[in-house]
Length: 378
Image (cartoon, rainbow, N blue to C red):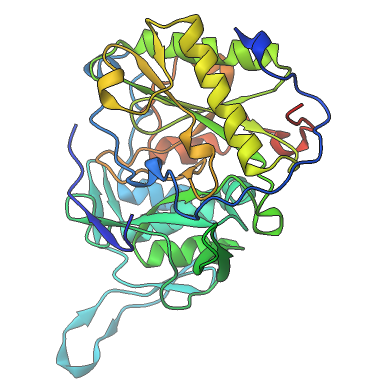
């Protein structure tokens, strides 16, 4: 996908064939192109199925921008007194400084229902940083920016721009031998710097920069056909979890903030990208073979009629998936939120918004111990 590609305004709206988990054999390193299979990063999904919208598990109650700011006010933000702009431009809003990053135009409205400002977005990312950073820091990023808000054009970006606090540039060589510049963040300041530049969504590679050719996070996105009942999607989640359980692979659940759920598997960084991607594909194929009327492993829309696409494609080198705790660039300020397995039937895919995510920070972390799992592909 070309750099800085503009996006239109977002719409309203049998396992025995797989190797078991265990000690992973030594693998040769894969070398796919850095931008391959970036399906999540044309990162809009179609509108949420009506059934999900009517689900009893409505989004956790949205709050005003003021209450969002209050919930995250202890996150290192400093409000300085209002001043007068130079050149007779009139009164300038007070400065907002978070983690040493000055937020320009903090009162600019980014989401309208509920009202969420640019300052609120920056405060949000500072507030969730303790939980979010382990899944984001030192992973190559693709981001979605909406500098004028989600009702205006947004764009996708995967190459670095001007230097910013906490944002690090890294060269990555593709299979063709060409080297391109990519970027990652390494601190809370990096999250806030991206928010200052209008970033709403963070999408990450499945590997860290220090082990770039050995991925350690496998993601399956259950992407339903239009109009599918939410209970069908939830059954798909449990079917997939069951197969992973049979393979002795512990998995974690999060909302997509769109129309499906994501199942995430932490792994030791030992397999090559080819082995990693091939394993994910085989899991999806087993789902399709076992329940051909429910699931497909084929990315083509025409093959998806009345079924759920088990999206394994994001597990290739250069592909990305939306990060835990990331906002989604669509109406409602939804969040891709880690949830407990016990919450599957009470939290809809769009069931957590920014205010709900902040409220959840006071509860136990449902993904506690994620990176302590010592499991691999055998």
